[in-house]
Image 1 (cartoon, rainbow, N blue to C red):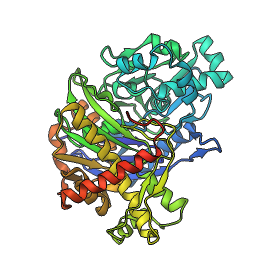
Image 2: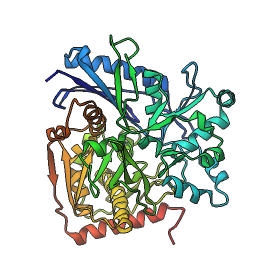
Image 3: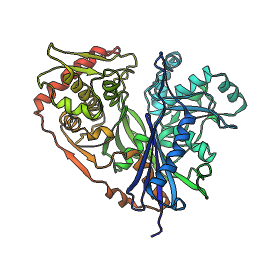
Image 4: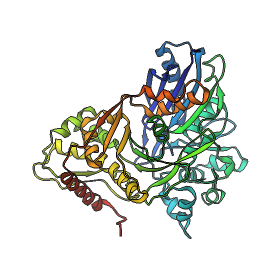
Length: 493
C-alpha cells in the first residue's frame, strides 16, 4: 500500500488543532494553539481571522514535523470548524473587513427583532429549519454590512465575501470561495430542501447573494493548496464540515436514530434522521453532511454555555485550579445539597431559546459551599443536554438508549456517570478526544481512497450505565426545571 497521510484541521472556539493521521487512520501527532478571545464591555465576542489562519499554517508544519513523516506523502486535508462564527473580507485582497464575530455573540439580536415582522421568523424556520436567532451566521453578516463602511462599499462593487471559518480558511489556502452543506445549513440563509441560498431571506437581511460562497457537498475536492509554499506540490482539501457534524461522522453515527453529544465550550446534540429533514419544536433541523451524492439530515439542539461553565469556575470564581479538579470536587459534595446553577450567561439555547435569560445560582442552603457550587456547575452541563434529548424524544418519537459522546469533558468520570443517570441510558466514550478532527480527516481520506469504512474500527469506547435510582433522578430533574423556570423571560404556556 502506498504510504499516504491525511491532515485533519479542527478550528474551534478556543484555538486550533492539527492532527496527522497514518495510512491506517491512527493519530500520529497533535499540535494545538489558542487564539485571542476578544471580548468587550458589551459582551461582544470576536476572533482575529488572520491570527487563526497564521496559527493553522504553523500548526500543520509543526504537526508534520512532530509526526516525523515525509511531507511529500501528505495526500490531503479535512477541515472541521467552529460554526456560525462569521468573517467578511475583500475578495481581491483577501483582507478581513472586521474581526470574526463568534457564534456566542448575540450582537445581532436587535436586527432580528427589527426584521421579525409579518411572520418572517416563521418563514425562516420553515425554509431553513432554524429558529430565528442572532446566534446564526446570517444575522452576524447583516450586522457587519450595517456597521462596517468598508463592507458596504465592497458589497456595491461585488468584492465582498462572507463566510464561516471553513470558507475563510479555504479561501486563504486555495483561493476558492466555497462552503459545504453542513456549514451552509447553519447560516439561517440556506433553503434546507433546495440546498441553495434563499434570496428573499438574504435580501431581508441586506446580504447580496453574490457575497456568499458556493454550496457544495462535504466530501468533494474543495480546492488545491501548497499551504503557502510549505509543500512542493499542491494537495486537495477534500472534506469540510462544521465541527459538530464532523464529530457525528467521526462517532460512526451514520444510520438514522444514532445520536451524539459534543462537550465543548457549548454543546451540540445531534440525531441522525436520514435522507429527509425532520422537524421538532425548539430543536434545529439542519444537514449532517453531503456525501457520495446524497444529503443526510439531523435534528440538533445547541447548548450555548456548556463546559464553558467549568472555565468560569476556574478563571472568574477561582474555585478550581484546573478543569480536571471539577469532577473530583463534585464527587465530594454533600449528596443532600440542592444547589442549582443555570449558566445562562449568554441566554438559553435549545430547547428554551431565550436570549434574555440571565445566569443564576439558586436553592442554596447555609451549608452550601465550594464543592456544592462546583457540583451544580457540573450537573448543569448534563441537565442542559438532557433537556435537549428529552425534547427530541417527545417531539420526534425517538427513544435514546445509547448516547455517543466526545470532547475533552468526557474524561470527567463524575460528569459522564451523572449524564448517564439523568438520561437513564448508556454512554459510550471513545478512547480519543478529537472526534471533530477525526470525522473531517476520515471523510477526506475515504473520499480520496486512502481509507475505507473500516477505518472507524480503530476507535474503542468505554461504556457508562445508569446507577442512580430513577426516583432520585426524577427529583433532580424536577429541581433543575424549577431553576430554569426562575431565569426564563419567555415563560412557557
